[in-house]
Length: 281
Image (cartoon, rainbow, N blue to C red; front, top):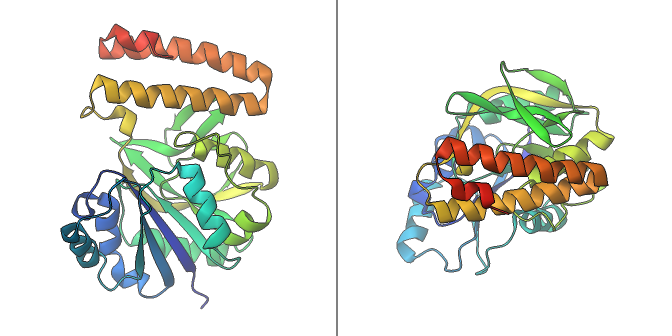
């Protein structure tokens, strides 16, 4: 039986190996990963590298897993990190698996991915069901720039049009990324890179495959552990990226997106009982 060849990218920021749900999940998948050709690339996006203690943690967490630690002192945008991997570390026969630092999953993810790639050799994209606080947050519906959650999971082949997904958990064939995807737009730095990918994917590919496996993922903007200043910085970047992406599609969509975010800012201000949100631009 043909086995998958994986390049697994994990992007960390301000997080030690022992505190990363994603690295802990990969550790629990070491048995199934041993059946596949794999390379885990741990991208540390901090200014300072791991301390000797943290490097020891990383080695212990990923023991018996093929991994490398990538640090250069820069907090690189996700789009640049992804482009680097696609251009320099991926070949046509490999599959790139993207992970944020705070996703929780089991070995069934890789088992289902392997089975699905064999069953659907012409499909380039494989997505898990991603949940946050009981809600399915990926894949989801997307009309213009407005998304909505699925109420029930849809498994197997799903039409690409009018759908989106989050980066964490995406598994993408190298053949598609190298031959038909024109790299990520680096004007999109950390937010909406996933929506950009799904938009571009739907232009050339009719379907993607949803795996019968669940990933638990923390959505940073919904975190109650951040200060207003942290949330404000994040929201302004989300807004800027969303409007830019809408402008790539049409000038009228860009205008509607401006209006949407103005209304959304007021909604967030009401929900969080903090009118500072209403004036974020």
